[in-house]
Image (cartoon, rainbow, N blue to C red; front, side):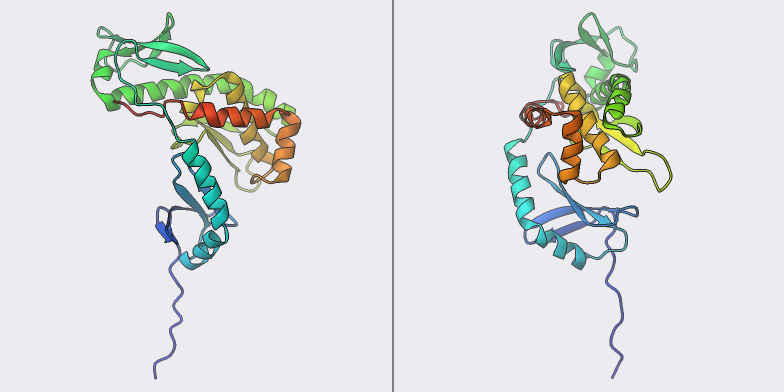
Length: 259
């Protein structure tokens, strides 16, 4: 009689897709993570955050234990799906920056790869960029990243001081629909890094401040438990109102689709 198999089930790897009781989850594996976690993305998609070396069986147990939480969060995301239609890269199209609206101006004399600029109340795009949707989108996103980084850099230190946390590094990028994220540094490696999604900078300044404060709270407190909200509430007593406004107004912001 052959010996019983001692094979260990394969560990999950980054990018895996996992199906659990009708739920479809994208797996994100991190060596720094200590426990499982779930994120419901803005498009109602599900991301399962997994410590390195854990198996699909363990992940399924975790997801089933949090089935009710997932259902509630997915329902919220469905109610707050983005409503903004795609943009057209034509003269007069409206774009937002820090709560104000600006018209697009297509300049056919502008060098093909010149960066987008804000001039005389208009966002100026080259004719070559406007003629190619992917190229035009990339130029506009690069502009939001550039000006957003410059603006947020001046807000980080005051909020970090108010919350009593060290100031993390800052970047603005495409976060796939998320407003912001915070990643702690390896042990002893400093205060970590904050990333803000470029669409955030379409919103009014007080809502950008809310997201900055929210992510700074993660420098001190992991997760969204009572201690997290207490810390945020001390620095921003009206955080509940701002969160509700972000949920409603945020769904009307342009997320990068081009018609």
